Each structure stands twice: as C-alpha cells, then as structure tokens.
Image 1: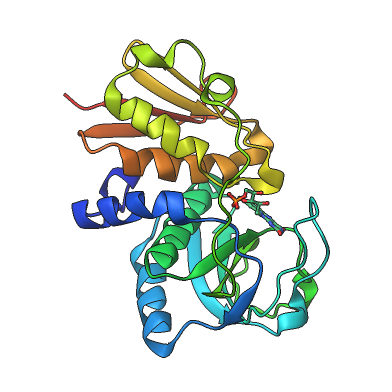
Image 2: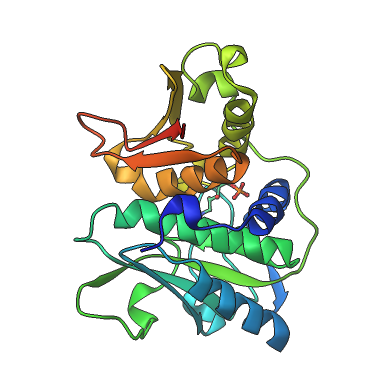
Length: 248
Ligand SMILES: Cc1cc2nc3c(=O)[nH]c(=O)nc-3n(C[C@H](O)[C@H](O)[C@H](O)COP(=O)(O)O)c2cc1C
C-alpha cells in the first residue's frame, strides 16, 4: 500500500515543490490540454494513489461551471477536469484526496497548465461519472491552457497567524514547510490551518470540516521535507489531524 512518505520520488518532490509558487486558481482557459499533456496527466492521475481515493480525468461541457464565489467569477473555456472520488468510509480518505488533488495540480502547473479546485461552483447533477457504489465526489479540478498570465500576488494570512509559537526556533526544513503551507489553496481562501512544533513533532491541524484543505496543506509540507520522516493522521479530537515526526 502506498504511504505518503513513499508517494514522491526525489525528482518529483523537487519538481512539484518548485511549482508551488507558480500555482494559482486559474479561472479562464483558452483551450484543453494537448494530447501529449492529456497522456502525461492521465499517467500522473494513476501514479498518485493513496487509500480510499481515486483521481481520474473527464471531459465536460463548458457550461457545467456556475456562479461567483468571493467575486472570483465563473470558470470559462474549460472542458477538461480531474475528478476526486473518495470512499469516505475509509479512514482519512478526505485528507488523502486533498494530498492527491494538490499533487496533481502541481504536476499540471509544472507542465505549464492552469488548474482550479472547484468544490462548489459547478452543476454536480450534470456530471455523469463512472462511480463505484461507495464513492462520493469531493471536488473536481478544472484544467487547461491558461488564457492570462498568473496574478502577481495572492492574499495569504501571515505565518504568525497560522503557526503557534516562535517559528524562528523551528528546524529550517519545517520553516520551509510552513512557508509552503502558507501558499496552499483552500476553499473560500479560508486558510484554516494551524501549525505547531513541539517535542520533535510538527503538527498540522484544521477543523474537521476542512479535511480536504488539510490534505492540500499536508501535500505542500511533505514536498518541503527531504529528511526521513513519518506522518501520522489522527482523529482531530484527541490528537491533531496530521503529525510529522523525524525518523531516527
Ligand atoms: C477544496 C477547494 C475548493 C474550492 N472550490 C472553489 C469553487 O467552487 N469555485 C472557485 O471558483 N474556486 C474554488 N476554490 C479555489 C479557492 O477559492 C482558491 O484556492 C483560494 O481563493 C486561493 O487562491 P489561489 O488558489 O489563487 O492561491 C477552491 C479551493 C479549494 C482548495
């Protein structure tokens, strides 16, 4: 069974880590991925696997996207999506979905494509998907050729607001991880994360409702840390949702 620590090869880790500052929510597309890009994305969708989640590509009519969230506007020109289907009875499947979806977005970004997580502003009923009985669609991801250049700046909380304690005392790799988490996307840009470092444990927590966002943040943190380590996913009540410890 694939675990998070084994998900990325060293080459993938550095390629996806470098893509983090270039990823943004692209909402206007000038076309679909080329045939070669589609093949590479299909390979990535199969390669990135964790228990309880399935990621697959699908084509959609452009009018599947709706509405306006935070004045961001409707997604236009997009006919290719990735679907994140989770067997939600399986432990941590929502967190796993966040990790895989974000790894996929960063892979697409590294290929020069635009992506946008879309959990709300699309017509779910219009999607006819080959789902298994126990699967639920947690989100789709719009993918395509971006029509415009990336925005210069993104609104983010300061590290002081999402980290507990004095981050200057943290090991360098964890400071890198915190900065990578800060750049992660989240639903409605809520950035619901709280990071802490105590007694050799780096914890990453969020309210239960935001497990997808938590998985996305875990993906960014994982890409920042090359030293051997282990992740433990908790229940978010007695223990934090995610905890990383250095491996002896
Ligand atoms: C789980 C999730 C769901 C999202 N759902 C939507 C959505 O339904 N519609 C939309 O336009 N953007 C959606 N977004 C994009 C966020 O609004 C965006 O990531 C956030 O505002 C930060 O901006 P950035 O991605 O450009 O850094 C979603 C993002 C995440 C992570």
